[in-house]
Image (cartoon, rainbow, N blue to C red):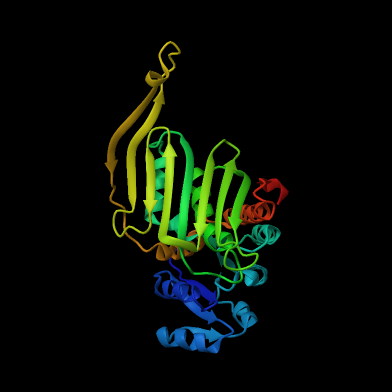
Length: 342
């Protein structure tokens, strides 16, 4: 299929769907065939922007079209499973926005269905495609940070306050996907604590700790009730430390030549045993490219060239299991919840 164009239909033309429509409409190896939504006003807006697309309020009409090779699901999370399931059953490669579903068992069912049908299943973990995050991943994989000890993330702002989900489900999927991508380890348990200040039973701030089978650890702070707007990832390793700050206009990534060495000489005093290193701070040049454009291009290329998808269904299932475990922990006063129990 190298010289072909991928026939794509986007389901959902709302807040995030319009961004996906724009990227698939302008992708070189893509033929955006349909945009589907129940709201005809939203469809009219997209038809005006891209006159070549067909619009429909009927999902089955879209799925019945043999020229549609792949379906992009950008609807509300509670509808993800039903639409993605129908798409896969119709023989369409499927992209689902994050989080993949609201229940881990539904995500697992989609993974199994995609495997049974030999179809590609991708989840929209956008920041796995950010060149800055890619630099962190490459640095870890090449051993530049030494042994990665732990990761912590901050995703806070004043707003947007949701009424149908808490800060954990609204904000944490980005950070969970980044953490799992960077560490490449299997998560073992989640302990989360939060507070509901603005609305009953909807946490406005959450602090969560994820522990991995190989001993690594990650911490997530997410909130829509904070004076600062922060989108930051910090990686601490045995040799170097890294930060990715998505709020920085240009210098998003920094590598710190900082570490602690402990001499194995029991005859010396405690002060002499521990050696602190304060080296240079390097600000690397990061390749350009809009993450969403790169993500959409990756989906297209993986189908046309039959390549493995980075943020595949298994990745999506892992994130939902962590979200679900974290939610159970929140309701049990921070008691750790093992993923095997989700």
